[in-house]
Amino acid sequence: MSLNTGSALNTGLPQRFADRMGQLLGPDFPQRLCLAVSGGGDSMAMLHLAAGWARVYGITLQVATVDHGLREASAAEAVMVAAEAQGLGLPHETLRWQGWDSRGNLQNEARQARRALLRQAAGGAPVLMAHTQNDQAETVLMRLARGSGVDGLAGMSDDATAGGMRILRPLLTETRAALRHYVTTLKIPFVDDLSNEDTEYARVRMRALIGTEGLDTATLAATATHMARARDVLQALARNAARDLSRPDATAPGAVVWDRDGFAALGAETQSRLAAAAVMAVTAATYRPRLEPLLEAVNRAMSGGAAVLAGAIIVPRRGRLFIAREPMAVGNAVDVAGPACLWDTGWRLEGHDINGLTVRALGEAGLGLIPDKPQPRAPRHILASLPAVWDGATLVAFAPLGFGAPHSIIPPGSGEELTLARLAH
Image (spheres, rainbow, N blue to C red):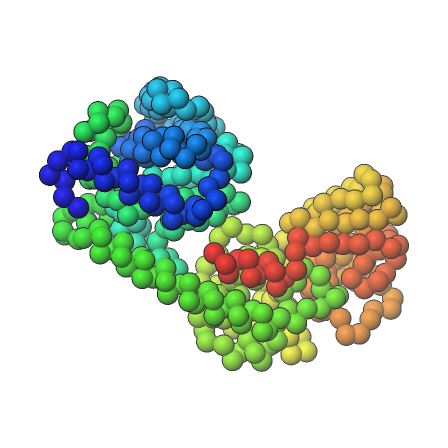
């Protein structure tokens, strides 16, 4: 696109923004959106573009700025955003992070905190973020340097869900230069974060590499688009395989159970996708397990042994593969006050006879207390991870094997449903 005149740019960019929002949201626009605005040029451009677009369509906007408290200027930047939002007639909230304890990966901790704060502030509304084509190109290079596969090289999605929060990136096809031209032409205030020049950060180094080597951000971003299409095809194949292989077991509620021979016949890529999705499903994890430990666990299970991975356990038994919570990783005991309680990753136990008792994993010891175990049944490692009702050291009830006082245990979802949900993203 030509940048010869400000007027041509400022006419075209709002229209492209409106078109992109229409593509992302479809015909049924939400009543409310949350804008994540840091005060940088990209997000300030998004603030004004979204404000103009929302006025046309009658959509309520709220503006949120996350102040990580890591730079002296961050508080003043949040004040600047608040003033600009007020001038546009939009409510603004500064979200302050106070959880940094100087341990761990700062960038990762800050990102997780930012997501959590925005999710809470948005209250279920989609959140707009101002990532650009340049950000996408940098992401592709960073992940290429780490040896990422198809999913990693697909980069950022313009419509994603993370931790229950829908994230929209309507500027992902726009260049940083175009947005900077937009804000300077319209005299929109913005700030330059000096940390964007700190070569300690991988993204800054990749940004410099793009500049010094003359790499084309559009081409790198196009690579992400191609990889995203390939990922979608691979995910569809994995979803079909998950449905075909599913062999639910009534004695292993919440577990993923597959036909072993059918799994063995799959290609390595589909196997790893299925296994990763299943592990994430039963552990409620946000991120995929690392590839090498994942492949090692799959190979061990396919060789006949139980394998532990990222809070999950994979157990082969009678021509099937069981994937469930690892017994040592399940939640702590919960004292029941009333006819129901929640446990671990969202299990719900119900029954009038459990009031005043305790819910904790059955464990190996509990399994030994059940005299008449039905056959066939799930492997002992799987049963040991499931919730049981206890009165001190006395096992009162264990629903999967029909033992003791009548009650019901309701997992967060069926193993198949939860796995398919993971493969949908």
